[in-house]
Length: 195
Image 1 (cartoon, helix red, strand yellow):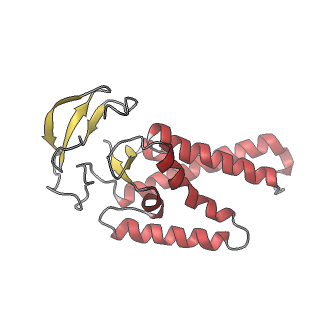
Image 2 (tube, helix red, strand yellow):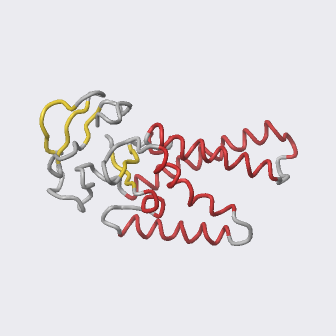
Image 3 (cartoon, helix red, strand yellow):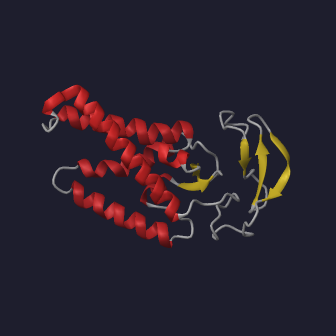
């Protein structure tokens, strides 16, 4: 983890340690030896990443998304009301650009810099790189996770594309041993429990 000194102190799977174990990262260096994660299966696939981190459950992820939706709706309505006043129902390119910019700041920037959206952070979840288990995952995976959400902005077929992404994500969330949604598969990330 020395290559990412911004990773906050906490218990993480250390590179090269056995699956189902973690060590304490003090923000600069690993402390102590690998410790078994309580109730962790010996290998990935049983609710664990390949780096020994507990995967978020489908319920936790759905809960985080619901929290994010409520937060985003409240903030977007407040911003639009402040900017457009009583003309809030009018649609124009400015509203679309504002929505995309807010979505980028809320989804991509939060994941890149903090390891998750507010909903995930409130529920003690974090997005990690599948190849290293590190959080925050950085800009490239965060942007790749955000891109499928733009599908709804495609004229005419956008809502259909969004519906397909939503349904596939739910199916994979409940049936994939890695609990990866469309967003995770594109970005090569997983969502873990931090608490």
